Image (cartoon, rainbow, N blue to C red; front, side):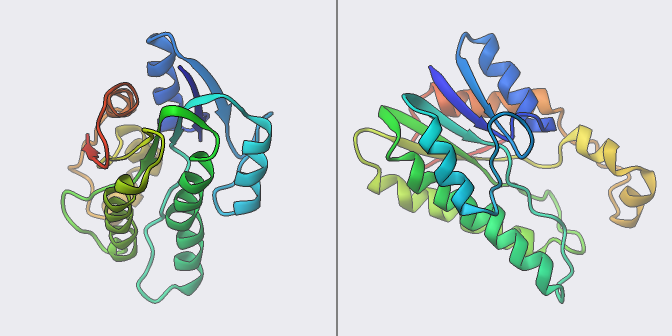
Length: 201
């Protein structure tokens, strides 16, 4: 398959790209920096990307992230809405027009094994995305599919936080799941026949 991976240079996107390439798929890489650029907070950049990339069998979005945000922080909440929630909704709506019949879109959500301070907004966005995918699935034309992967903490992300940040978030004992293991859920979503499903990893 010819697969567009958005956020292909990130920790998760790199692992997903490697897993899909290992299975023989042709990968088109897009990210904030690189030859093919996209910013999930800028819906015009999503439109522009699909004007240059054609004949796709699947689109995988690993780019959207939602930072832990204080309940009283207006700016961070607005950014998260534009990128992770509305950006991925807009991505699906545009991808539908450019996928071959029977193609698929896989979005990214997230989950918390236990809630921590700052997680209220992120939890809301992730839950909203899962509900959106379930509802949108019944409207997909031409045999198109949409699913979402909602991983927990990724091991590499926890390491990059550093011990002080992990301690402040009470995550010292959280190991996380390696990105390569999380990537298997994306491969299953792309290569399988699931529709409107949430994959946990």
